[in-house]
Image (cartoon, rainbow, N blue to C red; front, side, top):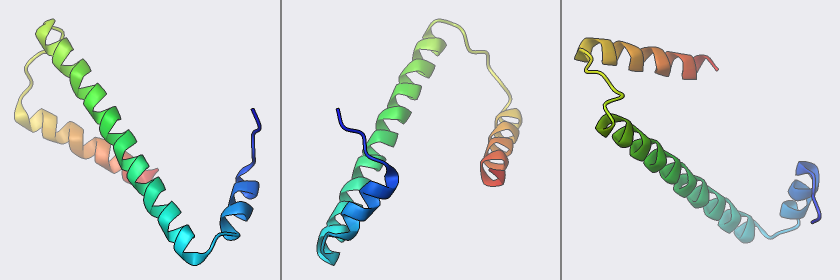
Length: 78
């Protein structure tokens, strides 16, 4: 299998017409969204399985919100 570098891929994309570049961006964006949806669905299935297996414990809503805010803050700091 041939591997290409990011620079080679960018050079190739730059040879496309503006319209083709726009189409490529749209395709990549949609595929990225779909990939993320599959990842989220997999995480949800694992969480549901863990819940049904009794591996999750109830938590106060305030604790969950605090953890979510900390997680979001960490994502922003990256």
